[in-house]
Length: 304
Image 1: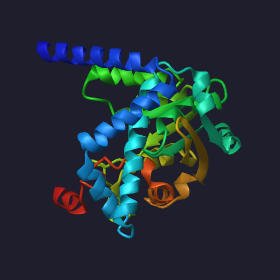
Image 2: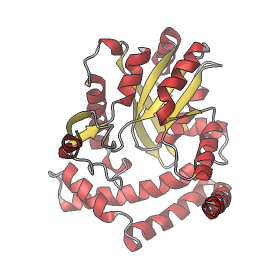
Image 3: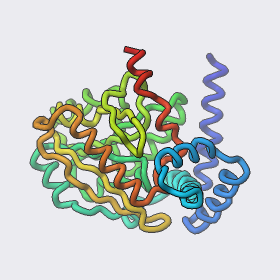
């Protein structure tokens, strides 16, 4: 137990020191490094290449091999940029983050928070999604941008990533405490924007909604829908558009103002449809290295 604790702490300090030094570099230098990492991961290490290729072939059976290879090439460049942009958040100023992230449809976004006391944001693993935490810059003073996250096994690494996100005013809530924390904040008369990243593969106990997504039978978590209905918060889809390296735009699109009036699964289905549109518009900027379809419907049926 003691040895494991020392090992975890050592991993943390080594990782933190390396990330801190990288974060000192200007973006231009980071992107030179990113190009080198991209060549290494794509052509030498072949990082999850089989997963990436299988996912792309199954998602886009209508595309030629040449088209799929071009998406794959752009994906590896994007994922390397993403990792270094995440590191840069250790040292990036709030002002610089705000300059690099544009927010559209702010008026409706703010009006819904004021009218209902909070909103739910459905965020995909797409483009510069981590930078949405800077939305506190457009919110009213005292309103809280809440980020729901899945804690890491290494508690030191978990603390580091929470610290990075908290630098920009984000209030981190572990996934298992979502309802309790949101209710507590509202009882304290806090208005909130609850960001939930809900496109990853669910575990066998979370796959409550199934639909055809990117040409495949796909399970989705419905936690965001449940929170929206519990609190009766309007629901927005975050439409992310990568402008160029290091610059992104997000449009807050209202899905429903009255979640309690929607049918079970309707909000989750709308999210799946909007996400598919986003990916088909520009496929390279989604997490294709994720084993998104590892859970099958028959696994859930057997589990009961």
